[in-house]
Length: 119
Image (tube, rainbow, N blue to C red):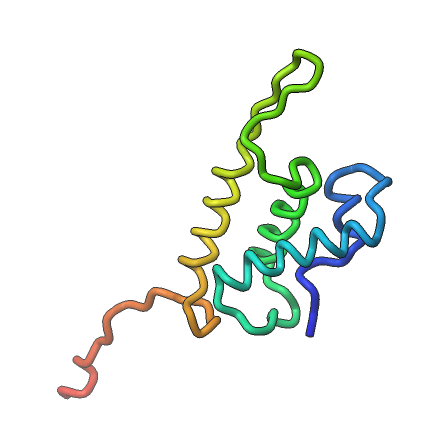
């Protein structure tokens, strides 16, 4: 069963070399849980589709920057606002819309044209 992303992808995405492998494994595990719940997939497709990979790596980056998903933080009189919670909700909502409960991509097909049988 493939992983959502390789552990080496995360430091490259974040452009920081100091993400430890143990930490990246935990981040991937958290993201794996969020996306499994949203998509209903029991196993990740092989290869992992670009949409799942993109959501996974973006969510993992959010966990690195803000592991508790706090909405704000104040350090030494400097306050930082995080938009991660809203973006996480957007990603998971999109994953729910894209994948059904059976874990298969949902597509939109045109109505059937039965006129060919009336010749």
